Length: 246
Image 1 (cartoon, helix red, strand yellow):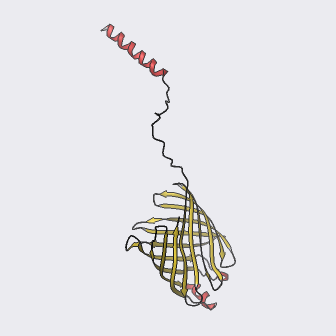
Image 2 (cartoon, helix red, strand yellow):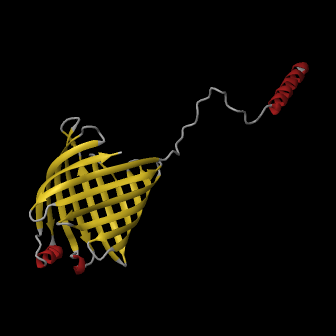
Image 3 (cartoon, one colour):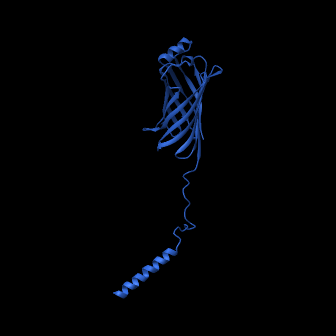
C-alpha cells in the first residue's frame, strides 16, 4: 500500500509539472471560427413621406425624413420634417439626437431641435421615446423644452398588409403646447391633430409610391389665432407621394 501511494504521488507531481510548463493562455486552433463583430456600425435612412397635397387654397409639398448611424445600442439620429405651400415654407425643423436602446424595440432619444419655420426661428431641447408598440404600432413621443416652456408631439402609424406589396397605413399626429406663442400662431393646449390614410405599393421594399387622404384640424386657441389671420382651422386634401428607405 505504501508503494502504491508513493507511485500515485509521483504521478500527480509529474502531471502538475507538465501542466505548469504549458502556456496558461494557449492560442485557439487555426480553424477556430472568428468572433462575432457586434460593434459594427450601420447607416439607415428613411424618407417616410415625400408627397404633394391637393387641398383648399394653396397646394402643399410635405416631407418627413429620418436616419441614423451607429450600432445596436447607441446611435446618432437625425430627423427633419416640414411643409411648403404658396411658394414659401410654412413649417421646417431639424433634430439631432443621441439614441440609446433601452429595450429590444424602444430607443430613448435626447438632443436638440432647430425649428426654422414658422418664424421667428427657435431652438429646443428634446427628449423622445421611439419604437414599436404592441400590435405593431410605430410610435414617436417627443417633449420639447425651451426657456422653461414645454411642448410635445405624438405620432403613431400602423401597416396593414393587404398583400405582400400593397399596404394600407393609417397615421395620427398631435401637437401640444404648455404655453401660448401668438406670434407663431400657437395657442396653449392641444394645437392640432392630423389624421392620414395612405395606400402604398412596394415596387421593392425600399421603394414605394403611394396615394392617400389627409385631414388636419387646429384646436382651441390655435384655431382662434388661425381664424384671426384669415386661415382655415380645418384642412384636408388628397396626397400622392413616395416612400424610400436605404
